[in-house]
Amino acid sequence: MNTSIPVGGTALRGLRWAARSWGVLAIAIVLVIALGEGMNPARFSASEMALFAFFPLGVCIGMAVAWRWERLGGCITVASLCAFYLVHRFFSSHFPHGLAFLALSAPGFLFVICGTWNRLAKER
Image (cartoon, rainbow, N blue to C red):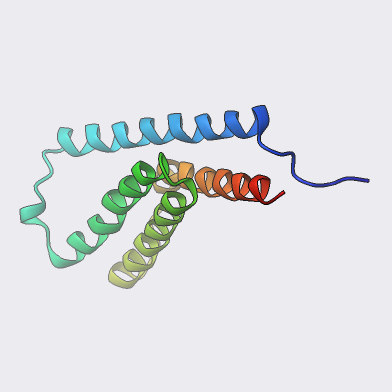
């Protein structure tokens, strides 16, 4: 029985474009929220600046990098999300509530899967 991951093909292409589409949508949502709220990083406190560096900045940079280097960009996105949660926990003694941060960062996980899948396909 062959249980190996299929090489490239339609499934990988579909997953890649799902990650890219979702990533563009997530970045657009973050920009709309930031512009709509009139966000001014110059007025951020130190804790707000630390949080901003990881989400949305690090997450969005990771998704942009993933268009060229899927695995690297996905890892940047996932690491930024994890760092955001940890910094938030440090400053407020609880983790962020809701799924919005995770939903907006989810393309990073898909990019990691795509990059890993692509690397495994090339090794065969």
